[in-house]
Structure formats: structure tokens, C-alpha cells
Image 1 (cartoon, one colour):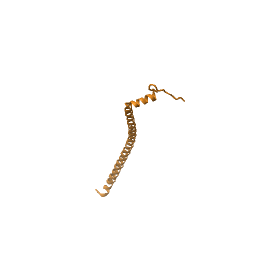
Image 2 (cartoon, one colour):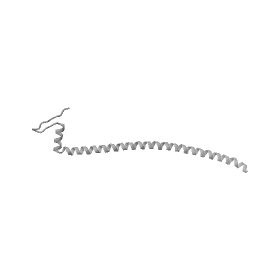
Image 3 (cartoon, helix red, strand yellow):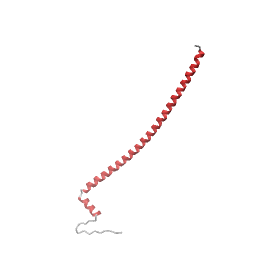
Image 4 (cartoon, helix red, strand yellow):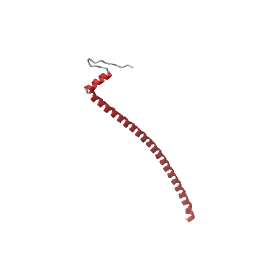
Length: 105
């Protein structure tokens, strides 16, 4: 075989290689686009979950504060003097011999 017969074969090989390389790069590009879109979706989901977590932590803190207030109220309700104050204030009860005055506007 002569040198001139080998050149067309090399050109065909080079053009086939270029086509395969272009297809590979195109497939890689599509894969990167798909991966990027999935990453974007997952970041959005993570941000939504973080907001839910923050809301849950705020509700937990509020519930703990209310729980502490209820515990304090329970302790105060075991005190006879506090119960007497509540009866006088809320139910307008008086001791024997006392007179109750209610202001009206």
C-alpha cells in the first residue's frame, strides 16, 4: 500500500473520532444539566426543611415557656394565701364581717 491510500483511511478515522468525541461531550453536557437541576431541587427542599425546623424549634421554646408558667402556677395554687387572693379577686368572696365594695363606672 502506498502512502496516498493510507491518508483517506486516517481522515475517516479522525472524522469518526471527532463525531464520537462530540457525542460524548454532548452526553456529558446533558448529564451535567440534569445533575444541576436535581441539585437545585434538593437545595430548595433543604431550605424548606430548614424553615420547618426553625418553626418547630420556636414552637418548642414557646411550649417550654408555657410549661414553666404552668408549673409555677401549680406551685402557687398549693399556697393558701394565693388561693385566698384569687377567691377575693375573681369570685369577690369576703371573710365574715367584711363588706364588699364594687366600683362601677
